Image (cartoon, rainbow, N blue to C red; front, side, top):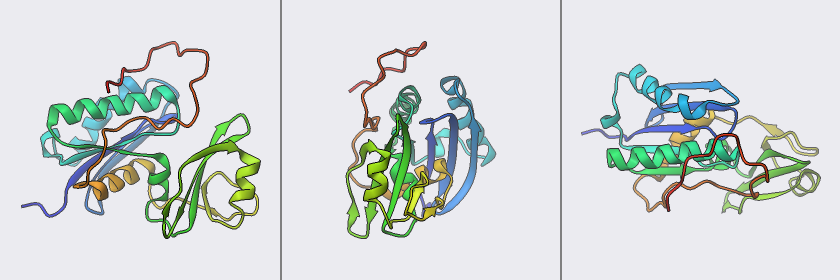
Length: 210
């Protein structure tokens, strides 16, 4: 009987397509490719390549971990839709993991994760020994003032020490999902902290069924 679950994590929340396969703390295979578009076509082949690299198949998996953002609207929906469909077809859980949770994985507390939201704004979440505060979106200047003195992963902010994440994003998504496995989790859903831009994308995003 296997002592550690086998978890496949993946993320397309930014200009990349990334995946990792972990068992416990061991990374069995991982890949990340930079791409501004084309994640919808590349994601499934990439996942199959990661599984093949480890000599494993879909039905060996115990769970999926999927990055839920914040990030590119269409990119997030691509991964979330894929995770939901795979979970249904494989009859295994799919666990949503925010980019904040992933980047903060195994980092000392307190620590903040700050991400560029453009328009001189930033997304941020603060993690303390007591738990995590709610993620926020606001002016980057205000964020820098609020997080003064706190180590920050992601953006370089004045008066805060920059800190590198402990794991590549897809690896961290898989590790966080593995830690949540066995607890009640909602179906993965995109984490939106800002409304969609007025101009629609040239290609419609996948439909997320509630």
